[in-house]
Length: 341
Image 1: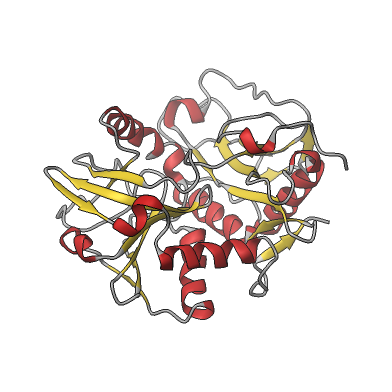
Image 2 (image 1 turned 30 degrees about the vertical axis):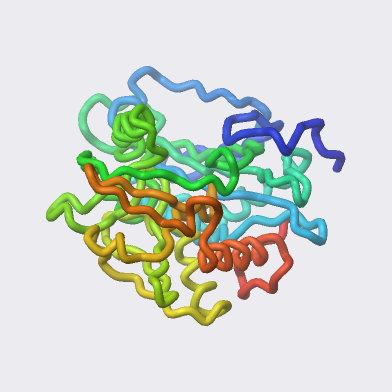
């Protein structure tokens, strides 16, 4: 299929509508067959549950072109599982995990012309989401739901590619724990907007959230997990029940241990020890890994020299190995790559 006439190298991380999106509806206790549609608009009653009580969940994933020309997506079964867990947490009906993967494949295939070419630095972002669609005024779950998938071609999440990220330790707390997945749509992303905009106004890219109970342990940022590297080359990630179970972070941990032979620790990380780490990065679907150059804890600055100009050496190896797996340059573990046929 001929690609759309888009300047792939200059697009940002924004919404560009594509030709098709997927829609399925839950009514009378069951999901309908679902279908592709060309209509990007959603029409809902003013009292729809999603507006009144934010009963909504979402996922984020990517499709891209590999070195050998195949269009693929990365570990969609884990996104399906996480959305199902998120739905259970918000008393929503689970969209079957096998149907989730099938719908993702169907939607990507229908928008093949929008999948950027290999080497462009761009990808097709895939956003599955679900929401309560019928009117609800009393505090209770909806009876009807809509599951949708939209796609949009995107460039790098953080402008400037490998530009180092500056982070402040914030006094803001999360409104609620993430628990199982992207429940943030209604509970946490919106509640973190004030904190992140306040950080931007003060010249920072992101916030570091600490645990709300003791304010001594590192949690995550508004949109990504932390990954640290010690001076003896151990990869460390924070362990907490209130941070997003990132698929990218889990994949990087596997890569560190099984591809690079590094020691890995998933444990509680105290703010006091961050100054002793050699490297720091943010990881997630959108950016994979972005190097952190500076963390500001009120009047104290923690600098990571290895991340000020480019990625630190270990972070770079992790990034290159994982993206090599995603792009088909390195053999992937079984089941990690879903080819869109």
